[in-house]
Image (cartoon, rainbow, N blue to C red):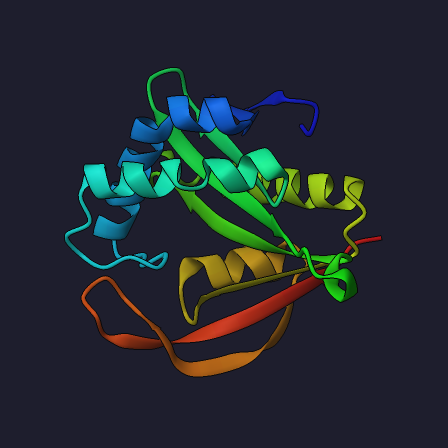
Length: 181
């Protein structure tokens, strides 16, 4: 999967360079807006519109270009169906670790194993880049929490009222880590 594009069921997962990220920003924006509308905050509040979401995605192009962020998108031939990112640490004492970011799957594409495939793709690429420790956070009690536990991630703890849902209500966040060998 790390070599560029790989099929996963009906979806093709592709690593995005900066130019592809800019080219697919509108499709990525649709995925983000629909995911937030479905209740996942991902750092955004209700009312997120496509223009704002597209601008956010376009704003990541510099980090992708510099190698500080790797992003994959899945598509089914009609639309973007999922995404995941790996944010690499640039501090000398943290280059062995990275963070999984913005793992999301479009509601109609759920239940096909796409989230697990995206996560595995990101884990493999991080390991290939020399990362030995991955971290992530997710809303406590969310379906993603089960995904990570089932994929071999270790629960590190919970922080109360860490982030809000799209309606602005604070919720606890669970932190996970995974050692890559």
